[in-house]
Length: 267
Image 1 (cartoon, rainbow, N blue to C red):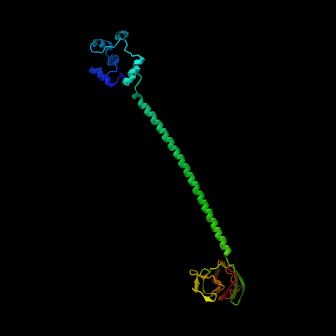
Image 2 (tube, rainbow, N blue to C red):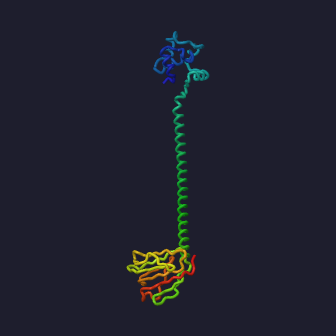
Image 3 (cartoon, rainbow, N blue to C red):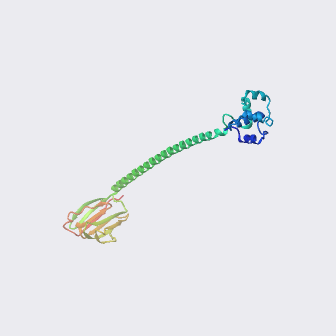
């Protein structure tokens, strides 16, 4: 209330004027103290004049009825006592700290916003890269499949029926890729006895072929002649190196037939 530091108020109450910044301020602080608590400051100073320090020119000050210090005195006293009639540094410190805190919060929010934007950009970039990679892989896979399909088509042997009569058929084979496979299967629900020989050598396995048990014979690199004996010709399906073999003209009339394949060219 008095705008006077606590230690000076205690000094006034205890009569310890040595710690005051000067005799002038002893009298000024006592008058301010008295006026604040509802006493007559001037009368109090007069009643206790014998114990209150005198100041030079005190009569002129008392005659004027004012104990207000000059600006130069106020500045000197402020340097000694850290006292400021317009408000102490301590009073302004909370406002300063609040302003600093607000600025810090704004900077943190701004930094977080930038980080979020950067993260979003990184996520979008990563997503675009991922999508591009997947698309590239799909294109590569598709291209590989098409290439493999084309290669398979190119590698399919050319099997030509040369002649067929009385249960015997002859075929010429070209563009055969060795080693290769001879696959024999039957129509749904059917069965047939099959015997296969390659270059005059009987191949294993031979025997009954049905829907659940097709026959596959691996053709070695030196394959030149293939002979297939079929027990039930109408039900049998033969594939050589991926090419479906054309049935003889009389396959419906003569069930048991022998098919002879001569390899004319290999790849």
